[in-house]
Image (cartoon, rainbow, N blue to C red; front, top):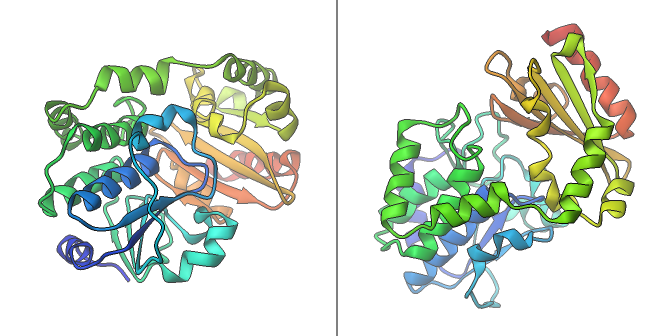
Length: 316
């Protein structure tokens, strides 16, 4: 059930022993939202902890630095930036999906699963929402919280260059800097620093590049073998997904990744002329207008062929 902002804030005010869930393959927005909210709730004297189904990349260490673990039986569950239940990850989906009390999301094409969902599709990131939530809770934003929220705002907007950026996004970013957010260090870490292993994976991805539709569609394929050979894991894929749309003339970029259990994960990035969420929804996924994703129970080659065929025959 959808709820309004004030009700969502009231639910948090009245809750304690709070578990925060973030989405699988965690990015800067879900983690920034989660850890910012965790820090704020603890400043209120509440007990709070955060869980994610996958390993959190070391580049996000600044988000949880200094936090201690707190083991308790949760009485209230919140999810942040989780558009649908399966994005919790298989294990967490089975354990928690039907128990989530409140969800904060910004995916217009999401599939609400929590008892109550507050959704702001016009927000460029979930962190924009959490910023407003923390302010409404009356918590003073310190440097650590500001760093968390700034990380999500920056990463979900491609360092403030995507079309989802609004004047509000820039105003929030400016306020976060005033609160002490280290924007230069965060942006350098998120966008300009790569390990040698990441470079190795990127090289293999370029070698897998295929172009269709007269140069309007570009596809990169990532296999498990590529991750093993490069010494990387799926936490390194955030830097790979934008590559296809950086090619001149490409309107729709796909990254197709081999998943466990005979499935392929498809990430889609589009120009302003096409809707990524519309394409992904055809295959049971969703997302935003310019960025979306879906999972197809098939091999990477077959999944790639299905999506490309759909785009060529129904979208272009």
